[in-house]
Length: 36
Image 1 (cartoon, one colour):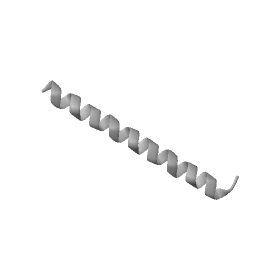
Image 2 (cartoon, one colour):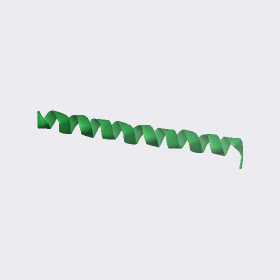
Image 3 (tube, helix red, strand yellow):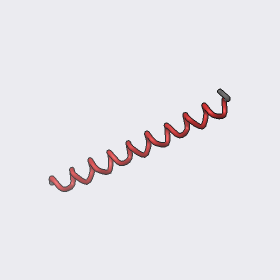
Image 4 (tube, one colour):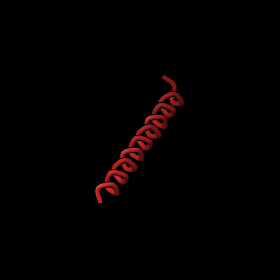
């Protein structure tokens, strides 16, 4: 395994995690606003 491949995999995983976290925060904020 080349270091570049591992680095790309880590960066890709981080990007996906950030995207999912952002979507969850958005959904939570929307449902919270709707409840009020």
